[in-house]
Length: 68
Image (cartoon, rainbow, N blue to C red; front, side, top):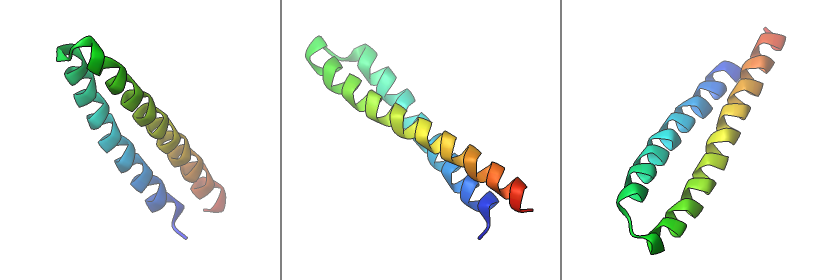
């Protein structure tokens, strides 16, 4: 199993999630108050997923160093 490649996949996913988070932040600024709560919920979910991807990528990269 190539932990480094696997780690890179998680990093790539995190970058995609970061782009979505940035777009949602921009959308939130222009939205009425009623929509901001919905966008905030989405932002919270995407931020959690982003954090998990970054953490998993770091763990896999560390595992690669241990095995190599």
